[in-house]
Structure formats: structure tokens, C-alpha cells
Length: 161
Image (cartoon, rainbow, N blue to C red; front, side, top):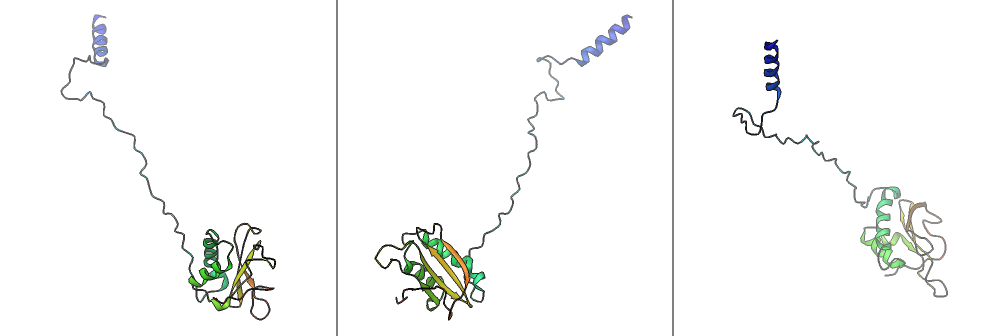
């Protein structure tokens, strides 16, 4: 029985942790600081949003995003209810001035218009914009041409500048 106690004591001694003074030159007692592997960040390609551009051989529908972007840019500026500003911006964007119409900025009694409309006749259809306090956000749509290749019904002002 004394042998069994000695074997048990020896086994117990082997299982106990060494005291801080015990040094084992063959092993390191410093815990290794291994950080858990974190997932490698992967970049998900951001879909590029193409800047709208004039499509000279395209339809009115093809050119609506470009027309709308010009309308939105002018609407965000200081001349948001000035017909000339839209016509000038559309001309600068490559649209044909001779194919445009615009309504008056003022009513017949001289009050500011509650909304103005402007248009570009394009391949038999009309790119039409509308802005103003009564409209809310700028509107840009494609509509069928009316009459003899016109886009706006009613009185429009001459584009003589």
C-alpha cells in the first residue's frame, strides 16, 4: 500500500503547476498572445452610377435621365423659377435651342408664375420639365408631341436670346 501512495503522490506532483520559482528552460511560460483570426475585410465593389449624358442618336426616353439631371441642377440653384436658366442650361448640355419651348415666368398681371414648363422636341417626342412653387420637386417626363411638332399647349414665350 505504501507503494501505491508513493505512485499516487508522484503522479500528483507531476500534475501540479510549478511554482513561480521553478524554471523550465525547455518551455516558455509566457502565454502567447494569439489573437483570434478576424475575417479579412473584402471590398465589395460599389456599383458605379454612370453620369447621365446626351445620347445624340437615342430616343427621348434615352435622353430623359440627362434632361432630368440638368433640370435638377438648375432647380437647385438661384434661378430655380426662371425659364431662361433652363433653356440656357439645356443648350449648354447639347440640346437644340430651336427645338425648345418655354412658358412665361410671370402671370399676365405680373405675379411670379406658380410653375413654369419648358420642353425639347426630340425625335418626334417631347422632353418636358416643370418647376415652381406649385410643383414641389422638379418634374421631367417624356410626352408625345402635339400639333405640328410642338410640346407645350397654350401661350409660350419666344426664345429670342
